[in-house]
Image (cartoon, rainbow, N blue to C red; front, side, top):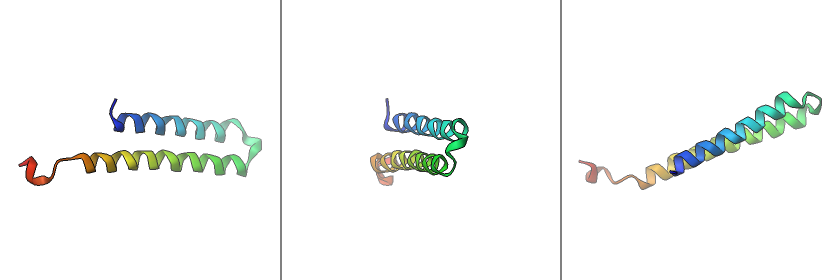
Length: 65
């Protein structure tokens, strides 16, 4: 499994949990919404880190020519 695949799997799990918080606990209100936002932020960070690692691991442009 590549780091991109791993990050995507983690991000999907975080987003699913955020969705469950928002739609499964309406009575929790603001606390659930804040937690869901935090989980979505973590998902975005996982994807950004995977993209950064991919860019860092890429050969320099001179090597690609």
